[in-house]
Image (cartoon, rainbow, N blue to C red; front, side, top):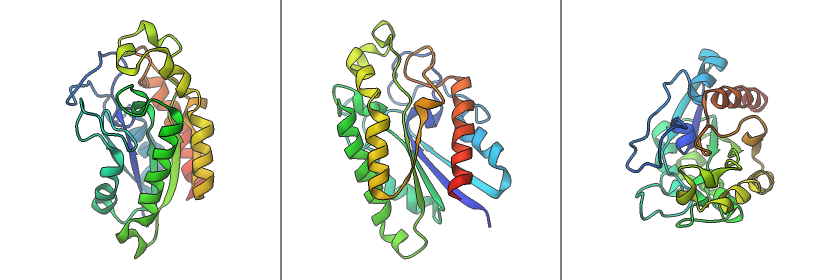
Length: 219
């Protein structure tokens, strides 16, 4: 039977290219399916797996963004789970947008948000009556060291976002371990492109390879 995998994330799952200015209302330029890590993942895993993309630009873990509405991940996860059920695995890669000064500001707050999303998945009322999907938490790539020189500096508050992004892996791994989820550190295999925030084509390919290996291990 085909294994169904939901990839729930932000613009780095949606596939925003790393060349544009900060954008609102989804006016980002998007990599084609064959370039996005989710599309490459589908190719790597073949027809035995069905990769379901649920990326949204600006999505946070649990924080409201008054300048980009409807980006609160925890408010959408239940709908995504029920829309795409049955699911064998849910992959969650969020956190970068939590570092904006107007939202979460800290990697610690973001890790608590990830824990809340995990609980939402585990407590989904429909999932409880079927096979509960496994969960893979991916901590985001690091924000570029030179973010202060780039177009997203004001959006993310400059240097502090870089500093906080370095804390993602340890904090997210702790949440994954606590809830019995699998974990992958995206920063170990990929980094940001020229805008300091988004994966470039090489990064998408590297992340797809790492996620594919992890999925084979899990399923």
